[in-house]
Length: 385
Image (cartoon, rainbow, N blue to C red; front, side, top):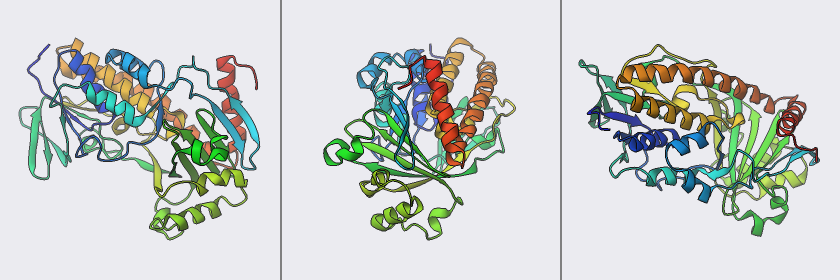
């Protein structure tokens, strides 16, 4: 179904690529402007758990469910909770029939990229501005000039979206929680003591305003996230020297002083890639007045803390719903307004839950996390280990 209309998608993450793919399956061409110079320009991050009713539904609409199943790790859904002394406090087994299979972010991106028509992705496109035109269309521009003019521009470009200012004056705010991302290579062969703590899925460790999550990816790779409350510019204030991985690891271990040596091993054996990630959020319930010709999806619309695991799932569901609406209604402004109305409601609910997850880094974190695990167990009807 060729409409003669042009769609520009700013951002080639899972949300933007899902939108382009679902549109393509309905005969609608789009152009994706992606900052990366090529698909292997940078690491894409760790493992993602995709949920029924959101990301998995989007993959079905995209015709990619079979390809996903080849890559997905259905047995990596286990979760364990330790206190900072190294005592196992709760464990949820990895049920292969569970509804949240894991996939590496890079694998998901490749699956989506390989499904798109040639020429859909415009690599190395650093969008500087999206400008309204007198005829109701929008011009997408980089520092050298115009990248194209479009009937609809979709901002799928994350927390610091260049598209968002066209519909909203809100910007993400620091939540007070800092993540520091570490990586462990070939954990099973090189660090069996650490590997034993994460047989499948992920492990969470909770102390007093200090927490840690370690999560398996494919190929025996582990991503570790250290969490604590500091100023947003903490990593530039001198406490941690990121120019020296050895000194940085020592400073991070000092912050976690008093934790069991077995848990500090997650820091000891990490490689030299150490990345601070201030956790940002848009206000819960963020919404805007519909503006014809422009809209947002994913983090551009509703960036939230990552505790609920809803980020990629919400983005892919946004994309699928928007694409289906555009395919089914020739009045694109009406279709976009309907998509936005639905998205605002479910995004507000997800964001509220994600903000509650900030309690994972508080003095009451262990009690709250135990309650969370027990609630998951009750919903699953599983016996206590």
